[in-house]
Length: 625
Image (cartoon, rainbow, N blue to C red; front, side, top):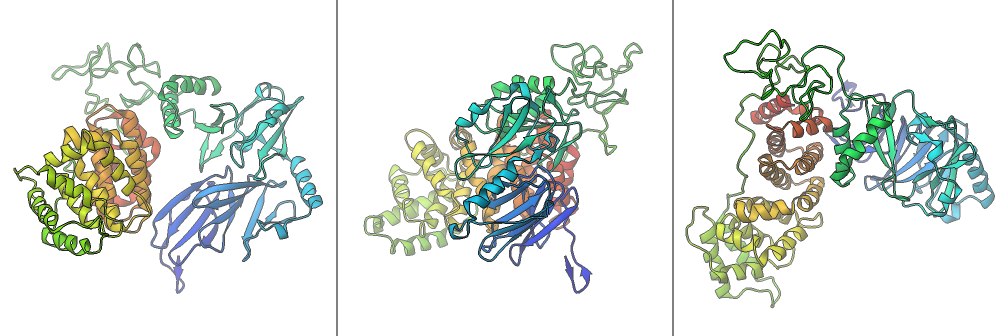
């Protein structure tokens, strides 16, 4: 970004040439790149979102008049329409390179491509081309040739492809692609917005058996040795499974199942599919150096005598060559006998540091974080003020207000020994049904009350738990007032204060709560972001002590999404603590975090000195990663 002839700021994130920019508003802009991604930026330097969809270079992008939706074109023969952050339409063109695009003031889209033709696409019926012109365009499209090495179609085995009868079944989404065998040829069809299969070209080089891409395949901005196309359900949407021969097939399979919300019982089946279809290439090291005893090629695999590399593989803790304090390693086992963490043969990471986890004051965190501060006098005053604005049937009587005031004094102190009465709890619940615009002081009382064991048990167990959880879930939404969003997230955080009830209930609702709560990242309220990051941290605390790898994977994914969106340093700090807590003392969780690339997401925070705890905690997390 240049001002007055001087470079004021550089925006770093793309992995290849940046080909186009487009301004959204005074504070945000878009960029597209040869890495097949589009990024949304704030002019302050923060990357807000990464959009995936193209399978090759993206050359150009242009914004619709609403200043939010946009179009892109690239080297994958496509024009793509993006609305509400999703690719909602893919339009194929007869030319391989679609060099440029421009959105006109009336919303029409103009594209220029390598065949020397300018085409205009419109949603307006009065400007739609004649039937003859559309037929000419479709004829040009159907006669085009498609190189399967482009990565857009996946690997092709002509003998396994269906015939034309497969086109009798309707598509499941706009842009879905199907390959059809016609004799010794392969034709590609795409499901169009008008509800029909449209031929988009002939696939060249696909006859005579399995066609594998000889080079790297670009997928979601990264290069892979293979990008398999997986059809789980006949007629259902295809799923892409990217794989490099240096990856662990089982970890790739686990991530694929997790990303597509598939049953974990298919883990072995998917992993074996990867091994069989990647020509037998699997993770392994040809060198004789020391490998990570947990994830390296020579790691110990229970039930076998060797690691995957075939050269070591003894259990570093219980095997015959294990390290025994105070003993000298046997000459008969030169590769074993040393402390796997500190000995001469200890695994050393790429940056030259021994792979040990240093002691730090930040994580793993063992206890949940609660929101305890409150101005009781102010809460009571606001409650009484808003009570006058409620409808007659919802208005609290003067006696009820006095009961509720007494209740606040009981629950405002975490160490209070007095037990709230059933009458107090009933009045609180009645007040919690107030309209959205005035309920916030009641939510504040509920937030305080959830720290009291008796209140926590009342609402989070037995008959009340279902309606209470439904109440919270209904309040966790983007349409609510920022004050209510913040207070309901704080209430959920405080539920974790009692392990037997609130914590247990929230863990049972983990996926629903987190999936709804993470949507709050799009708000601009700092306090909402801090409450969101605290909620994620409390889930990390509860998951840390268990072996729920699926839960940890889900939490890591949420952390990754939140770190991309949140900017407040206190919120970032709590996310860093959550990340450190999840990956501490768990090689599987650590490996999942590494596969998500969170190290590159958080590295920029390692240099933060104000507040110092952000930079310190970030550096501790990076050492573990």
